[in-house]
Length: 351
Image (cartoon, rainbow, N blue to C red; front, side, top):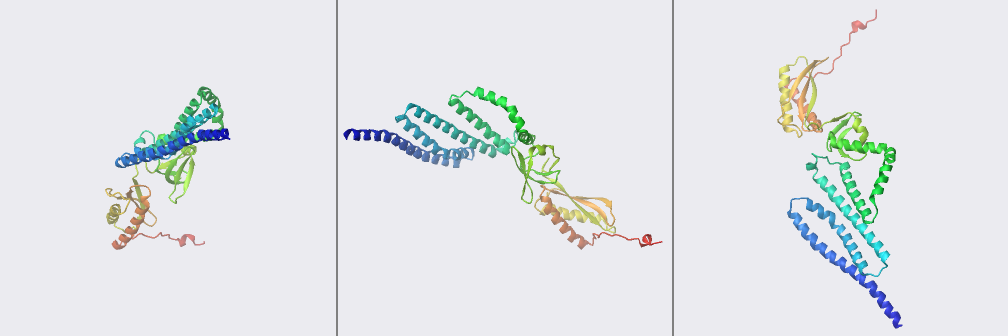
């Protein structure tokens, strides 16, 4: 009986000590986390730099996992587990630690790339493709570190990948062509995130992302058009944001043949200038002008040239201009004639 009790106490002690070490480690790590991140958060609030906020946000959650892993490691160190089992568990913890650190670094890198896209755009525009490339590079380094820590030679693996790369490339021709086409579109910077573009097939809208396979275009009716990158590089595209966002707005008008054309020009330019100064999207410093160009069937036709800050502003500018010009023409007695067709009855008489 005494031997059984002694054995039970011994077994309980062997079990209780590692558990106690684990709990103490986790509690201490939790206290350290609370104090450390509290001070770091207060320091970050005083700083105008966003890097510290990104690092704190990315490491605050995984710190709990690292604390648990550290507690398990210390508990295993003082436990009496078989050597092979302890070694295997240690390697598992090491792999999990490397994976968690890799994920944290990937999150930090992609957020930094996204936030500082304005500074990085001169070298490489920021799209979904470039962010994914950043993740892939970091994950690749993490995988190599894991293999090296497990004692697995990397050289044969790289050789195998090199031999099998040709077969994979042949099997994934479409995918790879879209991938490299997307990378070409991103680097060439002829189509950028936020640009308003129109495809030769008629689709138009804002470019919202360029990923590894498709380019996403958000149309004005709030739908998304997915264009394969390979087709995008071969298509004829109008980019309304190059070389800059400002664009001419053309409005065709016709007046009666009996109109005083000098007066028409003066009044039309006055109304157009009002639109440029008062309507959102107009360019105030731009001087509108008109150009007569056609003796039409029932009117003298001309084009009014206004200017908008970007593509979608033209719709409100045209709307307000036509409305105000119609009202002003009515006051000034300028006639915008209806279409006229004359029927020659003499010619159509039967013989």
